[in-house]
Image (tube, rainbow, N blue to C red; front, side):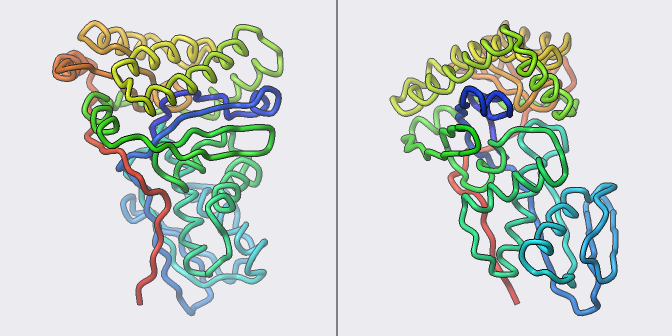
Length: 332
């Protein structure tokens, strides 16, 4: 999974196509997992062992994309159509460390995980950019799910990355952030589950419509979020970690102008409570409307902030920043 530290929303078309986007994100120690087991009965079996769900298809060149396993089916259909040109016989199971609608890039991370398992099993000649691009196409084009481009690349590459979106091109710039700055950020950045999820597609569609309608306040807010991504990059590389709260707050104030449904009364109340308890800034993770939020808590203020947030019924989540992205392996 990833935390979108700055620039979120500028990776979404048509804004990124018209003006170019910039995002800074970092992966954390919450994961999506996929296991493929080859079988010889000619059946494709989709499993969600943590939820007790299962679907089976016989000799399938293509499976319907309805129901719980829509992402799994989308990847299967593309793999068969583009690479194997014949049905596969296998059992594929997956689970995720965060719920859908968490704002941590859950769906896209799962798509990358599923796709990575096929690449490992079938020895497909795909590099990191190829995998991330294919995951994006499956989710956004094949399945028609609204969203941006950052999540697939974050999950594939891992680490701290400054990403540029120029038309149809994505450039991932890994950042060499000194470990002491990462440790300080990890120590001071409080991750909070609001106990609510969101439907990011609805918020993103509103954002896209605002750009198409040339709504000046929304477009100007996205311009400011690109500036925020540059500010965040400089702060991390130069070790100005103490300024990150203010940079987060700058971005949050502009993000709320992108689409009306980014925030609501409860989210605003949580944010104000965190600031009142000592946080210097924060934001909601992902498109908005619910899911995880995170706050920069300088000094020892994280304890007061955590206590203030306990009144809203959510919970804080332990995590660490990670340097690795997609990882695959094979066992007999």
